[in-house]
Length: 295
Image 1: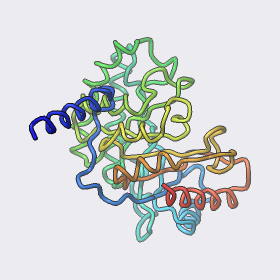
Image 2: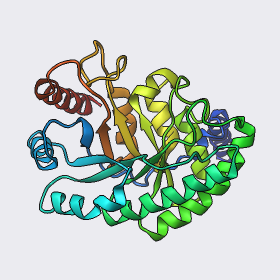
Image 3: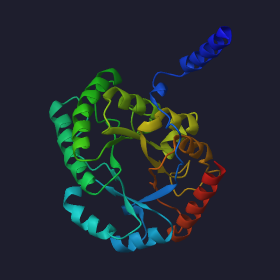
Image 4: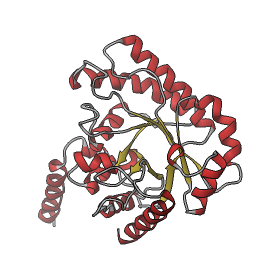
């Protein structure tokens, strides 16, 4: 009996040892809750002339989340609260809109980013939003290398995370593909930053389009984030248009990961369309529900 326990324990330790440290950051819900497919759409890309028309259209097609930009968000809180009152649609994530660059080599630019993010987070909290999506820096926005930038980012996120908790919101770190950002390109790396900051106000997200170019497995990427994952973006896998407009668009592997995590946050459309949106959006919704079922 002792020998059997020793062998089982050694085998489990060996499996964990093969997982990169960044991927060991995730924690599985225990027991796993049932995942939900909750679709969201970005305000600027939704069909309709007014916000009310956009929301009417999205509700009709089964969307339950609205993602808006962070620019001028504090001034829009009342408008958005009134627009969403009594609707099935709630505020999902707030997409960027802050000033400055978190990992700039200039301290004044970093401080501008921190202060700007705090303002948006306060508004996001009032709206019951999932959180504020941020990118630490796009290509050409910083001269710092990864080794220089990471400790600076960790320190700043600790301050921002504390503020986010106080205003009942959170940061969503978004990994991008290497053509857009050299820093933070994989979901596991975002999760490891969340682990090191160790604040409920700091979490991460995944983007199926960026993941196409940077991840070897949607399933592995999503599992590497675990309980830190609180938002997803989706678009076609090649041209970043409506899901289903590119041949072979498939998200089943990633959906399987979301189900294993008991994911209940939003999957938000971040894309345009080469076809008529009033045709391609319902088709995309149908496709995602079918693949969610298969997962």
